[in-house]
Image 1 (cartoon, rainbow, N blue to C red):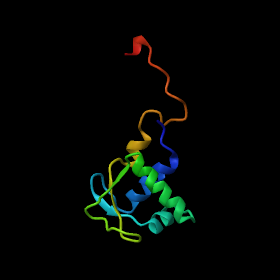
Image 2 (image 1 turned 60 degrees about the vertical axis):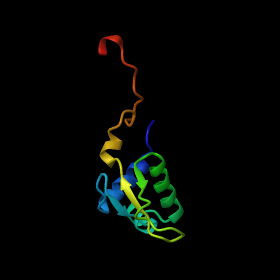
Image 3 (image 1 turned 90 degrees about the vertical axis):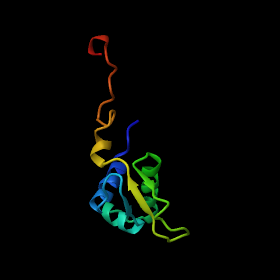
Length: 102
């Protein structure tokens, strides 16, 4: 399944904030919104949550606080380059392999 370019941009933005694969980083919606160059906190939050659903990040519940406004820490599971290089990310759909290519 193709990952939307906006989700790749979220991964890239969080990497630019200092995230490394397998490590947790505090990510605020305001900082993400600024990094992405968008005006809406809701849009930034929705994109972050979509990235979590697509297993680009996972919420680090041990470090994250509880309640509204508490800091949230996310662990980067896939880099933006890994996502962009996944099969099906190109402009053209994948063509089925023929018997001679297997």
